[in-house]
Amino acid sequence: MADPARARKLAKRIKQIVASALEHEVKDPRLTLVTITDVKLTGDLQDATLFYTVFGEALNVPPDVKGAAAALESAKGVLRSLVGQGTGVRFTPTLTFVADTVPETAKHIDDLLAKAKEADEEVARIANGAKPAGEADPYRAPREPELED
Image 1 (cartoon, rainbow, N blue to C red):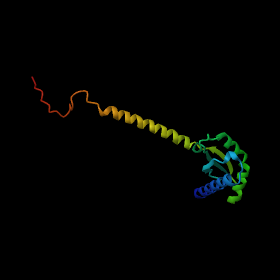
Image 2 (cartoon, one colour):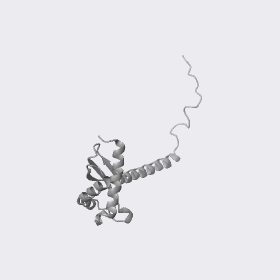
Image 3 (cartoon, rainbow, N blue to C red):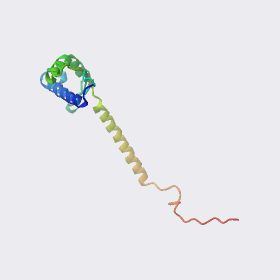
Image 4 (cartoon, rainbow, N blue to C red):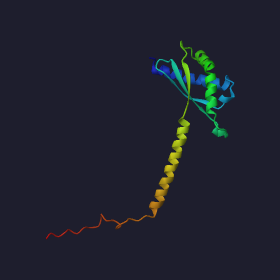
């Protein structure tokens, strides 16, 4: 098992190498909007899982996740070679690409929070004009002691 600090450094270096290669060296048009978001290495540094996201909504283009996955699979050998050259480790880790679901999850959470805010505003609007059902303050009024027979 490798040192965790060494694993973090190697993961960061792999992320930099792959991101740079996707930008400058791999000439697949399906990878132009792909961003590497995170890299996780196994404890023995044998396998690297690279998380990626495909942008496109900012450009009003639907993201092509399936095309990006196919392009990453086809470029996996070249990327692994570049990682081996760039890191200088004895055994170059195998690369596995996984689509990152964090942006979709964050959007879903934002939608849920917006719905909750609307519901809170509706409840506050209804409560603003509400009046108590009984006396105005039934608990603070002085009580008369009950007389015993």
